[in-house]
Amino acid sequence: MKNIDWGKLSFSYTKTDYIAYSTFKDGKWSPAKLIPDADIPVSPYAGAFHYASGCFEGMKAFRGADGKVRLFRPEENAKRMVRSAGYLDLACPSIEQFIDMCVMVVKANAEYIPPFETTASLYLRPLLIGTNPQLGIRSSSESTFMVMASPVGTYSGDKILVPGTAVISRNHDRAAPNGSGSYKVGANYAQSLHPYNLAHKQGYRELLFTDALTHQYIEEFGSSNFFAIKGNTYITPDSKSVLPSITNASLRTLAESLGMKVEMRPIPVTELSEMDEANSCGTAVVITPLSRIDDKVRLEDETPSHIYKFGDECGPKSRALYEKMIGIQKGLIDDPFGWIMFVDC
Ligand SMILES: Cc1ncc(COP(=O)(O)O)c(C=O)c1O
Image 1 (cartoon, rainbow, N blue to C red):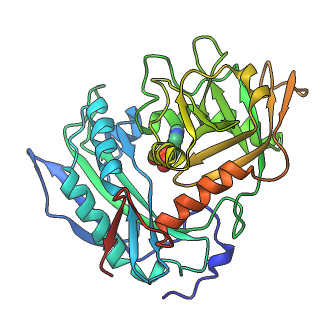
Image 2: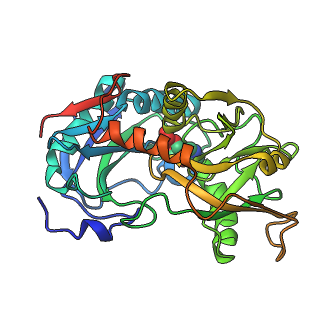
């Protein structure tokens, strides 16, 4: 195992040894191979650079209590990439090729999988980009698929479930009502960068987007979904411009297994005053509780028009969900849903 200060890792890039790599040309994929984790030659005319012809995924490999390495629901990521690539009309690896290359990169970088005792994991970043040289605006005819790996910690270093603050955006949109919001395409993230910078400059950890049509309903954060707890009910937005998060889908199943009611429906911002717990959820953030959500007419305003408070500690229902989720991912409890895939490292 590499000599890394695992406790100091945050959610940022650490170089590893290998990337799994395959290209699509003349109607077929090249055999997947391992290349060094280093710069790669790509045409400056590649559609990915100009027309955002690219999509990606995010997943984690965990070292379990028994020393075994686990991937969490990789097939769901593979299926989501097929959907995203379909939206871009980009050639996409099959589900089998996607998973094989994930396994390949985990094995090749096994020394970077953090020890069980830490809160860190090995983050995998499957990336599909249009790479043939082009000038005209059209879908790319050739693509490159890579799976990269990087050990990561949580957003709060080695601490978990540390509540943060969020601000609501009513004048900057992430995704149009009939646009690409439900696909994991790079273009969505470009739209969120500037408003995120505004939010961060004001000291907020998260930016909560509202629906682009009315700005009355909660959508999601720039890189995670939103869910709240009201009494014994898990509530999360139902919107076709929100990314279908694999973590959120898993949490809904876990909530039901804990005897909670689950609602997926439009959530008016004003309903936040009735919520007991509020969180962001996703592969990177797992569950990150929110202590406060500020509502602003304009993100640029200094003073919020309304402040919603949820307490300075993670709520009990969110904590129970977190423990179930991490318990399954790290092999501390049984996996009754068949979510885990073991990698023989
Ligand atoms: C916009 C957005 N929403 C939600 C999520 C959470 O999805 P998942 O739980 O599949 O990681 C992510 C991260 O992938 C994201 O980028």
